Length: 249
Image 1 (cartoon, rainbow, N blue to C red):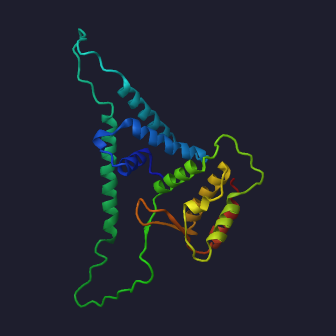
Image 2 (image 1 turned 90 degrees about the vertical axis):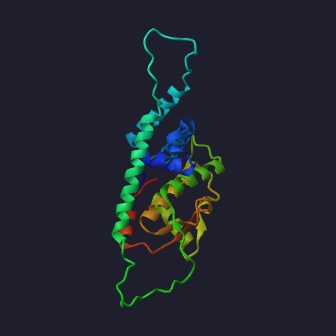
Image 3 (image 1 turned 180 degrees about the vertical axis):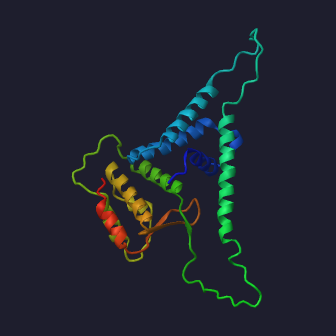
């Protein structure tokens, strides 16, 4: 789940290596609206705070596009130095970044000292087996990967005629059957052969639901590497009953 519009803006700045003190509003607004477009495509309820932030970005962009007055034009009233329209947003973003980092530091203190042992204490070291683990994938990377799938598929997003009624549970069962056996596949491979908006969206939602239920695990070696998907465990009874109660399309 997204933490909020500021978290999304901070992610965009970090991903594209943007200086927070000098945000290119036009570029950030375009990327931000692209995220909202994907959320709307999946028929997700977009919180009002995301729409407020979109309106704020559009307002700042429009103010920055206004032409400056000619150098020789002077009014009778004293002219005050105009504030950068980005300044209020930058202050909010800097404060959010500060408190988010503070929360992460406090959370890390819960395991601080767990690898410290008193003198004379026997330390049992587990011998690692198999390949080294990869980094888990944040949700932002999944949305970006899905955006890439949509751009490559060139699917028409206006009207889809669905000839066969496929529920979210059906697609989850299909993906589970495909991934069983311990075989990994890339995120993009899950969408091979899909050409309609319905199939693309329900497959992506099925993957998110399977990950939430701990049926799959998502890994990525580094931000530029492909996302890998593997079947993690059998569905528990609670997960099975939860899947049976959902009949989304």
